[in-house]
Length: 317
Length: 317
Image (tube, rainbow over all chains, first blue to last red; front, side, top):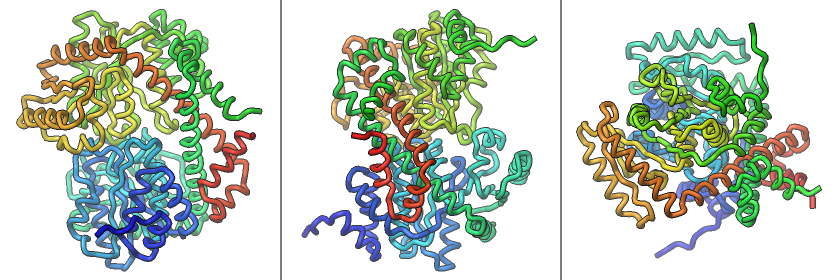
């Protein structure tokens, strides 16, 4: 017996009524992109409320997945319903199991208040940056109070996805490289909370001290990111971590920064969607224009001049 | 005594005459982006010839840098002049020294036939995908026969940059995760040559066997990627690796695939440049239009509808 396949709108209605199978299918539509993703995206945008998002990024081996699992455990004692998206645009090289698969097998498998999902959108240009906010809005519309986005991969795209959340945790551990390198790459700017995990190992205090020194070297900022120590595997420091996440949330709300950040995020999203759409149209023009391609190939025309020409065609007048 | 600063065009003339300081400055201009990058990019596009590029990507810990160094040593015995670009958009999380810094200190520091440079373009949207082909053309115009692009980071962007080269090496080593995960992420498609490095360790033969099995499961492809074993640290297998790179090059030339690939690469580049330019213009419109931002924020307008409206303004008629 096969069920008739449901339209994106039907799936959406079912998902907000609590149907987890429908919810999982919607997230698959978002992963794939295209017209169905657009339909779902529009529905979710209108239905989404003001759910909170926490991003977790950091070095491979720092224990991000264990930390996520520890946070889930902590939050389920408070009856917060939460979803976890494990984002992995580059699964070949992360060298570990995907959080979604791993955690689902373990502690939270039978808990209906937790929804865990891995997402990857390889090959779908601008993929994860476009898909992540859509997925968050669907989960929000489906009634989750909190969405945690854990990045499994370690490229710039993953850092950007984590940084786009309301509260961004950057996770380090002793022995994974020095803090000065992180500073150079702008990680200090994206972190709202630093977590030095595996704090029972040698060198943890030094990592904390280095981070604090660097934070105090820079210009004073309106929010001063705390530097916490945790041992996620046994739950040490998780209470304090959640307290600091809540403190950051309260600060964002009280200063108005939350509204400003969210407006900036949607502007960024519109920019990315427009770029994707226009690039596709330029690509279609190039595909149809063998003459232009020949001039490029023969170096009569350089790529910048080709762009000028294609944009003139796009916007006459 | 300070020297007068040179224009991008002057730097370019000096670089193609062999001035390595000028060459390094040009690459810095490309990293930064903006008008000077555009000027240099246009000059280089007209001057570039048909230099060959080899990309090296793979799991962290597989020994990509050591392999690059071994290839340099091998090639310098043949009088090929070569440049190495070590691409690292996400330096905080790679956990190791940057190849450029490491190798420069070591074997090739005093050899004028080798030019090694690290590049990172964090924060510059679409950064590395736009900057890498520009950098290659500058090095090509400056007379290098071969440019090796080694990716230090491990995100999708890095894989894409390596895959855009003429011959792409994918480097694995025993104990870094299984080949099935790589297959899922499309790595089989980007590799022209597989290198199982650290082949003196347990499990190397198994990695080779797994890879070969997976390659033979898929549809037959015009080029069958060889699966080589190397021990880069002592040079074992490097002669064979270079022979396979040359064999792939000869195959690309004889079948016409090289010309097809390069046309596709420049089309891709024009697409990316156009996307960046148009996205900036959409962003500027959004910045000027508080009413549109308010409608987005109040969820009267969803991001897709906003894009429709902004694109209509961009292209009247």
